[in-house]
Image 1 (cartoon, rainbow, N blue to C red):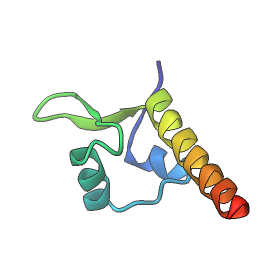
Image 2: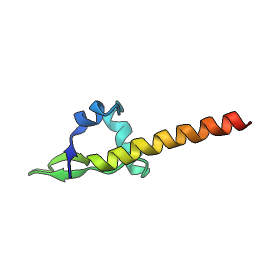
Image 3: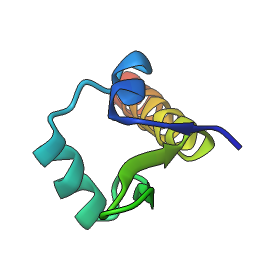
Length: 71
């Protein structure tokens, strides 16, 4: 299992601000991070969960394109 920091999200093309990520996490639209380390720890995301999020966004885009083409 690979864990990635906030900057790792950007490397995957997720260039959201920190506040926007937290809004998505609160709305359960983005995977919640885990905290590792002392004093509250660092926020790290499970890479496979982020990959599922990206795949879901691709599927949503493709479904919208199919719907538009059928209309």
